[in-house]
Length: 309
Image 1: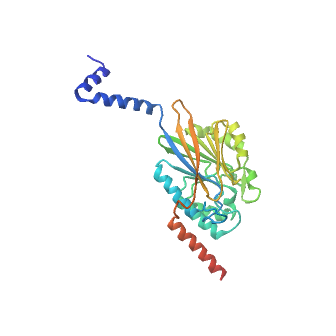
Image 2: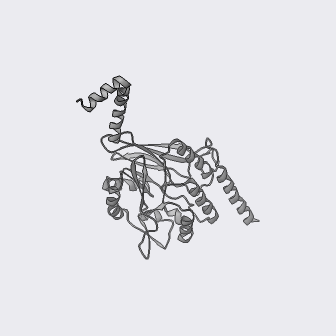
Image 3: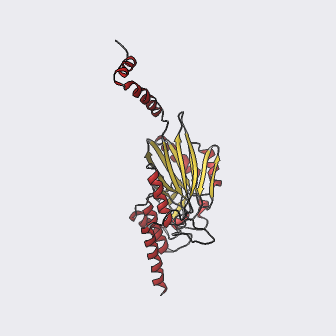
């Protein structure tokens, strides 16, 4: 009696299945090792309630009316896309009507995770929380708690699955980022104790850990040194465009005002670990304005005119 391999060879002579088998088995082998798994993460930083590009100084980049279509173009290209924001999507100063519109546009973008920054509290907690609930915004923060109860305002993290990979998204903001905006109802915890407590449970449930850090890259380095389980850090708050490596890990930030959309490509290596690359997509006139967003922004401008009259 022949073995399985000789049977496959003999049957291949008769019915042509052998050459198909010789093609399929290597593919199945590489899949079993996890080779070829990849995902894409798009991210924004410091949107600053920029509803549309200012068209000033020759700059046609940014603005939500263009950003929505830029995001749609990525989703059409990558069915596995995860969309993230590292914080500060609201304005730097109180402007309730504009911030209300911005929340609607952010909801329309269908972010998978939104990290809370200091500017999300510019109108106060009583403005923010009802709108987070109404628009079902996927806010997270491991370091923001209620001052009295010390309970978190939002979940500390979310775990998403794409292409067989479990992706943990953790959100934090340090106390230093609240130097100019104060919310008496909340307390901001120091990051190292917070991450020491939650990362062990996160790493057990995930393959890849992404940190949304609402601070500049100066704050990313000590965290990567202390927590090597972090795979990539997406920064915010300092309004910079950053893409560099520290101890082999990527630290990125996508500038300000929605001028750039960051795109991380994550490939799982055959022997374990990940290869992560970054690119910045300018959000310019090549992306047509989203029609609904343009109409909503125009409505906002009309409401301002009515108030002036």
